[in-house]
Length: 257
Image 1 (cartoon, one colour):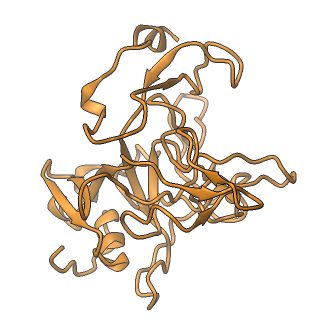
Image 2 (cartoon, rainbow, N blue to C red):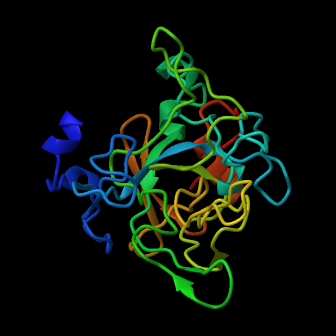
């Protein structure tokens, strides 16, 4: 709470893309809340960037990309999509080291953009949903995220198929770059505009695990790689290439991108 209070209404330019049209500040909808959900008073930085957790198994049309490290229907939040942990920034502090990035630091994505507004249809009807809290992984502000719980000594538990699948300031690659339209909210498992729990109607339009990488830049998004370099990924980057870049150790051949 001390850190959330210190950052109240302070904008950190490091976390913002200059072309991001969404408001710079957002209510403190974090796991460390100053008020009960929905009535928070403190404002925190709205992040333009998301961590890359990995990629969804068989996401390409030919099914060439294979990944066993995905959440599944055993997760209570499976309605929000599929979270992977084959990337670099994942809740797995025991196994993700520089040495575990066997594909090479220059071939592995770490962070990219969600720096424009996606739009979607409401759960029913023809209404449009495009407010700052919806159709995004960054609707909870900078201070958001989860792990798979902790052991008695405080160590973060390794990821599992049943862990929380929601995307909170990170995303798991599943869809193409700058696919900003064509979605409907609360479609179970879609992973873009929220999801649903086992209780009908107990869903919301944010925290999809598979919100695409998007930006206001012409033709693509910027991406930070594990070696510290920044590359521009075009809208035409095919899903197989994107999945291989998002995964630290798949061993696949990565063409020019």
